[in-house]
Image (cartoon, rainbow, N blue to C red; front, side):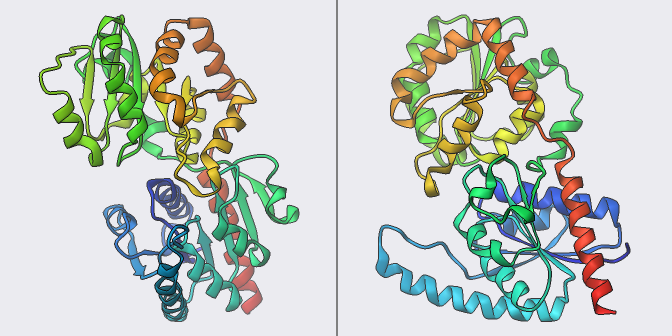
Length: 373
């Protein structure tokens, strides 16, 4: 199928943006002449990440509802109405044959207007507990691509396709060896390595857990790659003044995540859906510390979906400063446990997710085009 016209909408976090770009790239690989337009939220990270990947994006003034200060939602509703008007105009001008929503409030206005205008829509739900926007859009969606079993709790069963979550392609294509990867971070390939990563902005609890356990880490025969996140980097640098620890590589952001994963014998992470999909495909032993600051506590549900199958370990955010590093040191020293975690998490991997979703997108566009003739 040539020159399909596709809108992809959503964003707000890397967890939404990486799958969106993976889907776009997979559509382009199958249909090089495809015209793809992204629609995101103004002033969110997609407005930089999407153009950097070579795609055009238009921002809407939409924002999320404020659950703590209800009065602020008057402005939120006004922005939502304005966003729907803008989305309607964008759709009329671009004339898409299919619209894809990857979740987050940014996708709401665009997918709602596309449905109202008779354009087929496909939703991609990354989490084991469906997001509010996708639940609201599901009744009019043509297809709903999910990453977990049991999603008929939230969506019409006949629309669901189990595809898994698309992940960053460079992670799967990497050929770097464990030894080479460890040396990249100035560490010793003979020692066990723990990777601590809380996302691009960081995770306060993971950082505090590392600081609290500094003396313990000093005595341990392991090494760490610790991504503090850009938001916390200055604070961590101040806290570490005069505290030498040669077996810990500290950085605010890891650009070469393929090397970081290859170096790690054990990963400590939040439980975002995109990260979990990467751990499954790469077969990484992982301790998950779900963020409590997310809608519907969906990260805990993501984590427990793995824990129930012996595919991950789990520490509550409130207990992490006391329990996380001791559990990590115990786990990384136990090859039997590490191997069990790797084996079980690999069974949960969904391969070629982006390609499967791209096939569904192209099928919907073809049906829409045929209907219009």
